[in-house]
Length: 272
Image 1 (cartoon, rainbow, N blue to C red):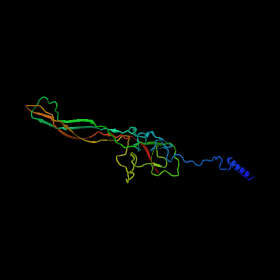
Image 2 (cartoon, rainbow, N blue to C red):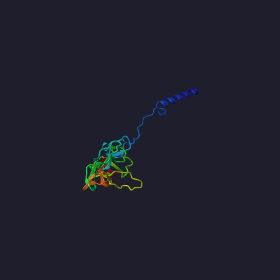
Image 3 (spheres, rainbow, N blue to C red):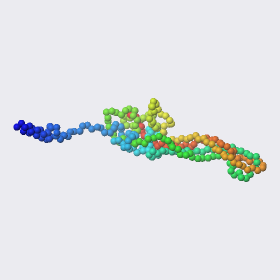
Image 4 (cartoon, one colour):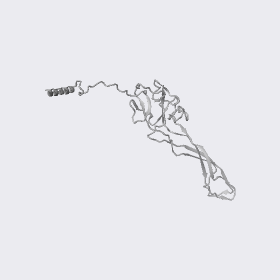
């Protein structure tokens, strides 16, 4: 009898566990999901930024106006949305050349004797002018291609706010709430701070104030050489006005040429 009672007890325990009561071997009961993590980020809608990614993050979309262009902080003279130059193709290296024009004064030389025949190869003294174009040269602008995206979703509040003095470009008519127009960056390219260098210091030329490319020229020095040439003279006087054989130095400025770094001007704001 003891053996039979023990067997029945085991069967009852096993059946109770499979029935879904308080046993631990039953089918799990579904429960309400816990709080889900917030999606999105705290940046305001309209923010524009570079990303080291192949696709824009959630809430952002590719920003076509910046394709093939760098972005510079807009100003009253160089308004947001204005562009300079033509967009770069992938890994394109822009080139430029310069027009060069010069005039060299060749002194005269005279000979005792009247010019005879066979002097067609001699040159005449006086001003010699020429114009040419330099060979194409690379603009040699260092750049990296990055994805540019625009925030198209509202900001999501987080426990940790964005840091103050954060700079951000915006495709908006004015800075969003909590942001103010950036100072000292309008019309200038942003460069990473070198080690131990003072921050927030403008350098170089004047800020960009119009949607026009910057031009530059070069000082050029060279020489003009007149080769020697025989001359036929007859008795009498005089043979003069011939170009003197020699080497003559000259220096000129090239015509200005543009370095084409295509840009897009956008509103830049600073987090308060």
